[in-house]
Image (cartoon, rainbow over all chains, first blue to last red; front, top):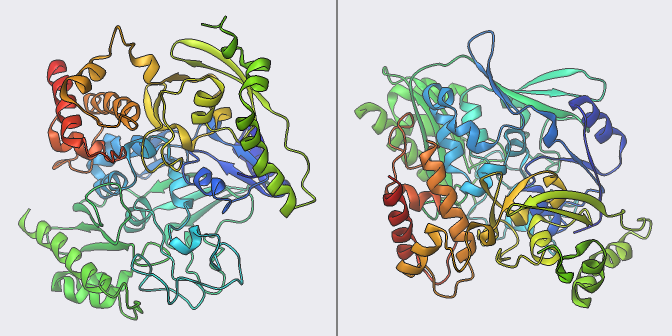
Length: 317
Length: 213
């Protein structure tokens, strides 16, 4: 691990100001992904700003009947909150599908959104990777790509976003709230928060340098049955090959977002009008234009079948 | 305990902690300086204090020191094991303020004032924690390397179920979880055992859960 200086922030604004004015600075909260990457010298911050003492650790009702989740609420606590379990079950299930008990106890809401890809070529510092070293190339293209993206990828990057939580937040139309060094607040719809790789795969989110996430807001509950179906190589503690976050109403209408298939949680609202027609119709629209590799072509039919399984559960519930 | 010379960390421990430790700690810095000649000397060590197994401990550590290395290399509490050092195996599991975490994926300086419990703090050879006794009785290990992490995790898992924290295998998210085999197996998935003692670990946990219920 490279050497770094360390300090604790006094407030969100203080944290943002320090991050904006200190070269090579990064926030640290749970640290479960950042420290992993620092040990491998994939991340090499020169200064860490510990934001754990800033509060932002509560889940509160909003004025319009939704919930505001503090940025530092731990994944375990968010999944266990009874309001989330009752009204936003897809979020609770997605969180519980991710990582291990130990990691969920430490990982935060904001940190989960900001975690980096698990593409094996991003992790291997002997390989070119446009995300790790812009302009160096992509070893995943033409390489071992079984886990990687099938849609929304580019000539520069075919990595996936690893989060389960973010897929559920996309289905729920969440909003990411931030503050910057000038103390200006901003609300970013989750649909715009994560970026497609394009030719700048190292820029992963809409955040400006130093911008600090204070929380995530959920709109008022939309009812329906909530599902998070995660298909992976072992039954627990593994990243998704494909995951389906869905909220399905009695009349067969609803929402669907996919994980494990793209550089961001994958949702196409126009595809959801086909939900009463069945999984094949939805999947055809949701994954129209998919460009899988030889290794991961199985993800396209797998996504359709995972969605079909969820829709079957909803029909027979 | 605090009178033992090897636990007098502030000066002697740092100096006498072993040449190998010093060399390992120094080499990445040298490498970093090779790559980036502009980089200044390593930052000054940071003082911190926390409570480990009921005892207040003061340390002055390089910012890079993980909680795991602080416990093992500086406090000589070697019960907590370093397996993968990347949060994948669970051998380093300890309890911080009663909650299980991977001690390899957290910096010691982030734990100012925290209350840490390691395997040494759960029980002693003369007075085993019920989970330790159950692991012995059910042969919940072979080589034993993952065992301290398994036991710390198992103790926390029963507490999590008791507190009503749900898991991925919940049929109904709003119902209280029960001490079933499938619940315990799902919750223990962050602790890997290469010897494959899982079924005996599950039996040990079931016994302790049964005694509690």
